[in-house]
Image (spheres, rainbow, N blue to C red):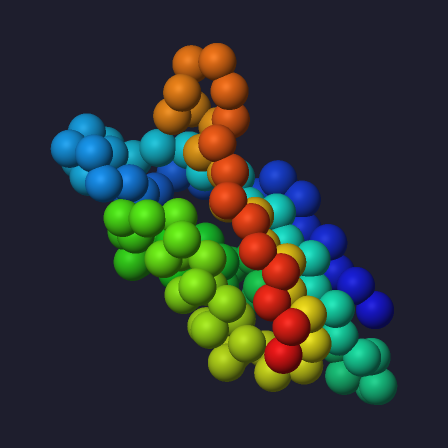
Length: 107
């Protein structure tokens, strides 16, 4: 089974520039989770809450750090995860494009 979470948006502190450390900015998260369904399921509502909570609480400086931290915390919280795709986007950081980083993790 695959859970797809598309365009989860919220505001958080993320970035290394001075203004990014003081003003929240919008982020967009896309996530795909592969797992084996065998009478146990992954609650996608809990997954989205976990992602948002981690991003807001940790106030990451780099998107790379956020990706790696979410990988670890999601696998720990949801051990059924076999493969995890994460994409973190900052849609408002540049005027003429959206900047994103993504990674696929296999456990």
